[in-house]
Amino acid sequence: MGRGSGKGGIQAGKGVGTVTTDPAFWADGKQPADGLPQEPLPFNFKDLKDAIPAHCFERSTIRGLGFVAWDLMLVGLLYTSTLFYDHPALPSWAGFLLWPMYWWWQGAVCTGLWVMAHECGHRAFSDSIWFGDLVGLVLHSCLLVPYHPWRISHAKHHKNTNSMDDDEVFIPYTLSEYGGMVPNPADECPGPIACAIRLLQITKMLTLGWPAYLIWHVTGKRYERRTSHFEPSSPLFTPKDFMDVVISDIALIVVVSGLFYLGYTNGLMWLTKIYIIPYLFVNMWLVMYTDLQHTDTRLPHYRGAAMEWIKGALCTMDRNYGIYNEIHHHIGDTHVCHHLFAYMPHYHAEEATEALKPVLGKYYLVDNKPPGMWGVAQALYETATQCRYVDDEGEVLWWKRSVPKKTE
Image (cartoon, rainbow, N blue to C red; front, top):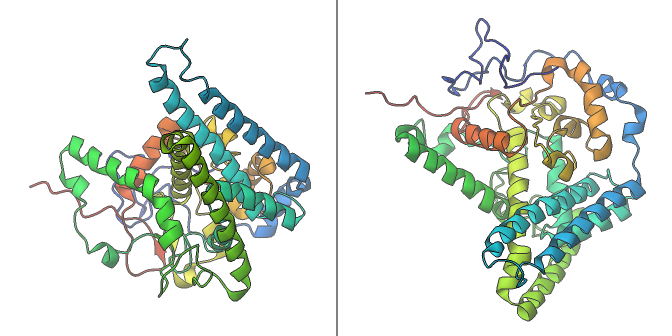
């Protein structure tokens, strides 16, 4: 049910581009054969909601707190394990193996906490908004995220997903912004060099993308003045948001002060190994999820009158992240459902997704790459290769890679 990118995908039809699984596929601004259909939707929002069991919309504060407690327990156990990494009974080389494992898994588990705070921001954590906001503020602040500012801008993203005019994240560059129709340097270089260039591009996005977005709103909607998630006067916010932004900033100051104190008392190296490196992995996961959920050659962007909320919400790709589906509370493999019903708790999203598939039919897109990090790596490399810019004009926009590779 739905369209995928694996073997046996939808075949190209008359007047339609090639499928993205074709090795010769080159994103050229046309709808690929396995892209999101652009025919009028055969269903409406009520049809989708009626297909989902009513209990899927019920929120349980106790159940939500249970997930938070579980994640916090794992964080504590992972931290406790570091106390033994330098034990004299272990070989001298053990730390070179154990510390990277701690960094990776602590980052993964803390991303689960980030997702729970994200659920608070969508009012899906509890029937009590103030309590959900309190939990979200604490969790996000400990991960150096301005809870309310991000909650506000993220809500705008959900209202305007894949809108060239009003989305708040990962808006594509247009042809003129990119500097004209020029060859992609990676396409002009020999294989190993081209691969290295793309890996550097991906690394830059995964390491610098999150702070750049929070501080300068990079890849977000183009405003006429400075835009930051930390400034109450930012065009992201209205006057009624003033105190929410200030409260979030104060919470961050408290957390940063605590981190400085821990660094002062335990040493910068200790802080780096225990907190900073796992924190960078959290940032990596956030950017990776956001990029792969809405950036794909099969997902269009809309401009002007072509943009409708439900069409934008369907510009979402479910992907199988393997074990990380569980660790990250199914934020990646049920994201289509999440964009249609953001106020639904994550623990109902799998059941709801299965209920939605028959109604969505070909309008449900799921990536059929291998589950886990190998499939994620393939998807990142494909998007870095194919999704470069879109046209300056038009209402339904599909990705372009660059001018064809020179053959002379």
